[in-house]
Length: 374
Image (spheres, rainbow, N blue to C red):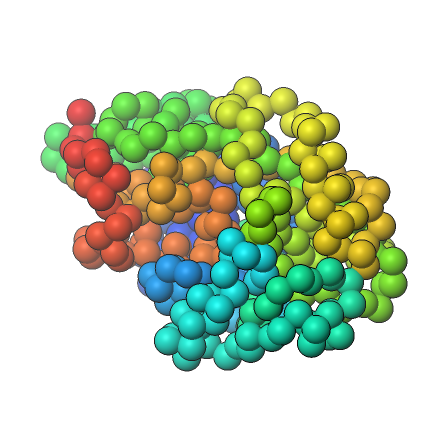
C-alpha cells in the first residue's frame, strides 16, 4: 500500500471520527477495522447513546459544548439526523441537582432547577422525590448512523477504509514513522498511527508503549415499553442512595413503540474484547427492572429487549489522549465517551499532526505511566 501521513486503527466512533477529521484537513490517511464495519462486538453499535451537557466536572462540561457543535456540523455535511434533542434530567441525592445546575450556570448553559412537584407535573413517567435539573440541549446520538456518516464523509475526502483487516503489529521505523503489519498480508507505512481500538487497545499496541490499567467490562441495557406512547421522555441520569441508573429513548433499538433504554451505571463483569460472552446478567436485569418499577411508573417493568456492550475504563474514568513518538493513544471511553466522538476525532487528528495534548489530564503521565516506546 502507498504510504500515508496517518493510519487509524479501529472504525468505531472514535476511529471514524478521527478519519473524518483528517479527511477534512486534506491529510492522507487510511482506516483499518479488524472486523466488519458496524459490528456489535465493541462499544459503538446501536441507535442510542446519551448526549448531555450536565457534568459536575468543568472540563467535560466545556467539551460537551465543543462536541455538540461538531455533531451539528456532521449532520449538515452528511445530511443525516445524528443527534436528536430530547432535553435531559438529572436527579437523585447523590447526583446533587443543585450542584449540576450551578455548573451549568457557570458555563452559560440553559437549564432549570425544578422542585419535585413541578417536575412530576411536566414529566409524568417519572417518580421524583427531590429537585430535578433540566437542560434542553441534551439528546440521543444514533451511534450506528454517526459511524456510517463519519466514514462516508471521510471516504468523500479521500480516506480509504479496510474492513476485516486486523493489524497484527505496529513497527516503529528507524527513520521515523511506522509500519502496520496486517493479518491479511502485506503492510501499511504511515508517518503516524492513531490507535482507537477500544477494548482491544492493549492487544493492538502489543506492549509498544506503557498504558494505564484499562479495565474492560461487559455492560447491559434493557428496553422497557412506554405505557403511553405519547409521554415525553428526556434522557436522564439518576444517582440515589439505592442505585445509579440512566435512560434514554431507544431509537430503532426501541422498536415501533419507542421503548426506553435503561441501564445501571455499574461496574459490570470484567472481561476482554475477545472473551466477552454477551450473556446478560440476571442480577442486573432484576435490579434495573426493580428500579423501573419504583422510579419510572410510565414504563412497563418488563423489558422486551436487552443487549450488552463493552466499557473500557481507566481508574479515574478520565480519557487517555496522548502521543508517544509516532503513536497516538486514543482511549476516550470509560463509559461516557460516545457523546464526545467528533471532538475526540479532532483531538486525535491534532495529536497526529504534532499539536500538544488537549488537556494535561488526558496524558499518559497524568495516568501515572511514562510516555515512551519500547
